Image (cartoon, helix red, strand yellow):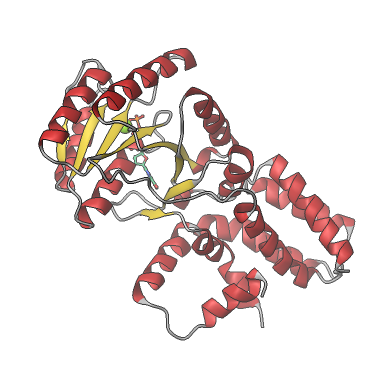
Length: 332
Ligand SMILES: Nc1nc2c(ncn2[C@@H]2O[C@H](COP(=O)(O)OP(=O)(O)OP(=O)(O)O)[C@@H](O)[C@H]2O)c(=O)[nH]1
Ligand SMILES: [Mg+2]
């Protein structure tokens, strides 16, 4: 059964469990902007053309590029689609829409499988380091993660490794209070030192999850690399094999610029996952596919709003559903 059929059957399934329905709703809401711009254009294409022609392919290519799927990804995608059209003798644009959804999904799941699971340390605290350029949503994401894991019964500590930006320490402290997490931070001092002291405290208090915030702006790549090296060394001396995750936060609205950030950070440090924030405010939802194809680091979480509950574990099926829901319903 093709993916399109599979989703259609999910949508028409009579009973959906409550949790699933809630999750689906969150994706639906968060991806509304991308859906209305990108997907409705795709639907229009299906109605506008009665035959699959070169012109159809050109328009499709434009739509995909506008959705920030990334030029490389789009080119490969178009080549594959054209081959399929030829081999399977596809002439109906309407049917081709189903094939397009299938193929978009294939981009994500093909190649090595990327795990979206967080690497949990069974022997002491799990340490997650949050990195990314300024304003992308690092601190907010830490707050959301604290909320999620605290709710799951973990003892969480937040450490303020962004010690220089005015208000950064207080901002994290607020999240700690809001989520009943422990907190460690000091302003205007060396981040590595604060992290060192924070981890001593975390071990003393038997914390199970440590989330470390870092500064967004460091003048240049060399400085950033040195800083992160130092931070990693401090963390590793305290807790072997830590950090267990280094999550790079990217603002979805920055589109292709976000891809460049990912490529740069990948050279600087060992990024284990990506958090894609602010998907709710942009039509550039296609960036998830570009990240897979160009960067090849798993998207582990997505931000679908500013609130505590607006962080979701990334799920490609829910994502595709959130994007193409109208097209599924469109079907017979
Ligand atoms: N709509 C929306 N807004 C978000 C999301 N995530 C973060 N934000 C907002 O983005 C803004 C910046 O978030 P921060 O968490 O302060 O970003 P940061 O990366 O820590 O910024 P610096 O510490 O200055 O580098 C805040 O207003 C957040 O509420 C999201 O998923 N959706
Ligand atoms: Mg911050």
